[in-house]
Image (cartoon, rainbow, N blue to C red; front, side):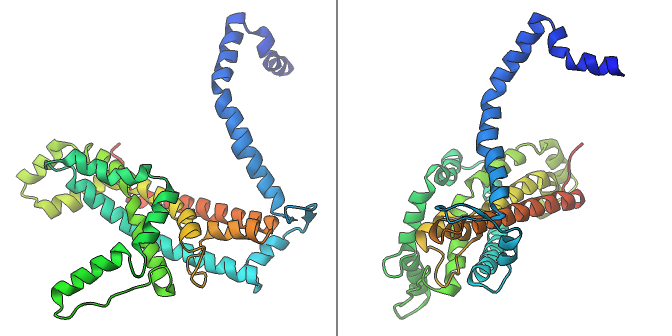
Length: 318
């Protein structure tokens, strides 16, 4: 056994020059990823864990407080109340936005896999918003939701005028009313469904034509083929898009930061925005790190739960 261990320790020494060169070349090609992972992932995450047990105002020395930051998250202090509010806002946003994104992107993919004119133009048009910087489209949507001059209110007024004999005075303050702010963000999230649509289009292209033709021969109508063939065959792609959509919804930050800054009355104070405010507005970096750990546990927990549940409804061909 000792000889075996000694041999393992001397693998580099016992290797031929060609083998050593092959190993060095392999590590050289992998070094950008290794260095990037250590510098931008492993070290920051380790420092985050350490900082979550500290109290630090970004200026003085960090002071160890144990689990104090974690107790504070669910206390009746203003910081604890903001945390509970941000959890509720993110959960509400996720529950509404994710199903709508999946349904609409899947419907678009179904439509854009048919033989229609300018199909590629439509596909490019729905994907185009993804290449626009988030800051830019947040500013654009802020204008769309403007109470007096916004495009959305103008469209709603025109639709109402079609069915009403009197001119409409509809003038919703989307980003300034507690009841409308989160639905406005949900509606705005549909602007970014191009990536999900592309994944669904790729999945629909993998469904064998012979299977669809056989179903038609057997008398299966469009709805029967949809629920008995298309959706079961698309469950891996639905699952993939759902995981990405849930993670992205919990990480929503830029639109809320630019458009509302968490208002009105903290109705759009999402988790990541709350972390930012605690760290850089209130200078509670230790507490902000604990909140980041909370977000990490939530995302990992949801993802693990979805992978476990997927065994019951995701169909894999093999």
